[in-house]
Image (cartoon, rainbow, N blue to C red; front, side):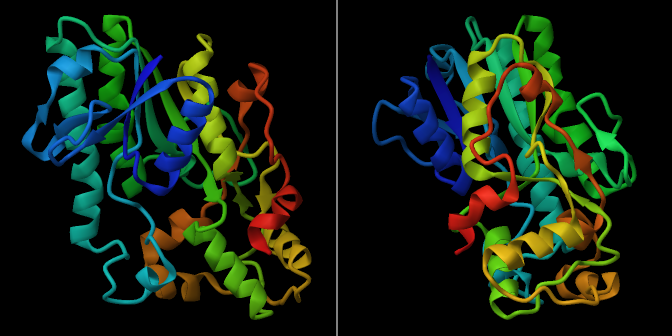
Length: 311
């Protein structure tokens, strides 16, 4: 298939592109600058511009672009580094997705021909705090937090409009991604190296995680499986309580598991109140029900299988 990918130069995008190419798909990268080759497609969400001719030649789109929710590196968590959820940062997160969704919906509706598959990146943090409840794709997410607002108005709901045109739309709700070079992995690795690995908050909140390599593999799976539609949880089949997650990483790295836990208030002071909830204080016991039901096989189903990413 001819697959257009937004956000192709990002951390996840690069892995998705490689996975698609390994499965014999022809990849076209959406770019905001002047195109340099035939496998690039110009678009500008803020200006509501797109190369309609190249768009009409695509079989599918995987939409990964958007202002990053978490800082891109450890320094981004520091005050005044620009990574926290300031009013300006939240505005960029919101509008980077809203403009892109508006552009795609209007383009689909005006195009003479259009891609028949659309996969949009989302996150299972949109479910909000769910306690011990097992969270599947049928679970209604809690409203009232910033990410739920973004999900409803930008990430998912607007793009379901193109379903009426016969487009198969998938909302890929990924868990906290782990892998070499990923900021979440860097944080957990640093804490363990300092022998201060400990649970955050009560430690009993569930932590839904996933290997970034399995994320890329799942995107390709959703693309090729006609049965995949609507919300799809892309998380490890083994969510862990935060205390068990921290203990497992400490064991993997042969480091001390420190107790008592880090108080919630310290976490929120360190990274900001709302971002702290998004990064691990909310309890989300997500299960990839649709993927497992369709026969998807995780390469990294349990945290201890990711040993090489932490050492």
